[in-house]
Length: 128
Image 1 (spheres, helix red, strand yellow):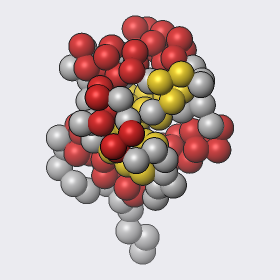
Image 2 (cartoon, one colour):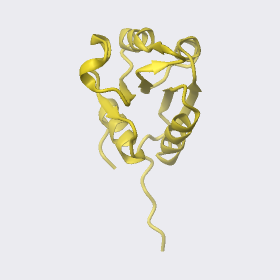
Image 3 (cartoon, rainbow, N blue to C red):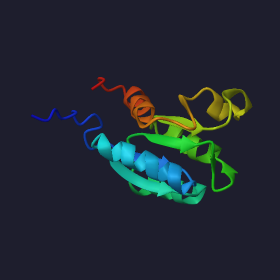
């Protein structure tokens, strides 16, 4: 008999703001495996902002740099709307802009479980 994991993200809409295809795909697979709905991945600031406005996400892992630009505009929009987010980056927390340095943080490279645990915590969901 196979034991099935509970649907931790239970159809929550998760925006992935990441311009690295392989990392974005890894995030996408992690969200899908936890029964979440993926918005994106968005490889640019503009597309991230458009997705936020078009289909308001429930949470978002956001790379510190998206499309070659700091993700501060994305973070500010999410914060203004009360949408929880976490920064997923290879940069040390100390070198991030102030808007990003106090946010929940997952270092790259990351484990899928780490990403899901961060989203669960950001959404204040019971752990699965």
